Length: 340
Image (cartoon, rainbow, N blue to C red):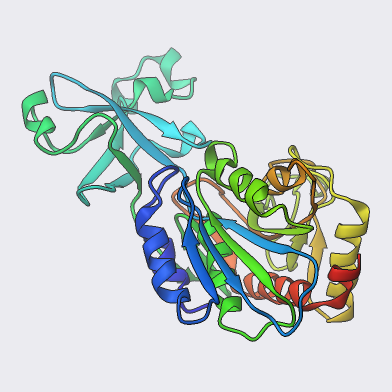
């Protein structure tokens, strides 16, 4: 997918997705039948297919986890809160970039050399961290940043090893890239594509799309946690890099209709697309928002396995990304989805 690097390196945490939305809108307008933005900032694209069928929505979120400035100290340091679920253990020493100014900052905490023995045994809490922007006073810092400004992990897209990619924001700019790719193609059926906001703080954007469009069938395109790392028992890995697209039967937000997730599995087999079932009930995604609409929606989640999710260095495999793309393409073009 040609736009993956560019879209991962854009800055846009929850509620501040404008730059991501404008980038996507520019790229998809030549291919979509209709494109519009709703009141909450979701970008909705409709593509006319060869046939009408059930109302199908493919969804991926534009936002990424990040940080918001809540206080500026007299010494010019920035106290902050996390936007979305971020493990405090991955923060200290990380570079961040501010959305408004492009300014660099460093997430900092007391160095281990001056910690007490008791402090060394504990995880440093966000409330005890700060962002260093090189200012020496509150007045100097206030010329560069304001309370309420947002930042994200610094862009760092790289390809490495055997077929692997490392970057911030693969969750879920990858899903957006899948939809951008499919929008360029001729479709069998009319399809809606929702590039949503605020997923990381509770799937707010997807909820708005669900109520506005009331889809019959929804496909959440996501990344999901791969625990295939040293020391993890096989039954606790959830999914594994290199084993293909991940089809979920249950997570912390959704119990998937068996007709829907089994159909995804059958179509993967039929079309020789590599896939795996998520073997741990963990995480959640926009499928929960679509399932809870006023009329309800049959929903599937098709995800790419990703190590170190919600960190500065999400890791995926290209082959898995291609499997997700292939399975989503097959689903939206299949007669089975419209006859389920």
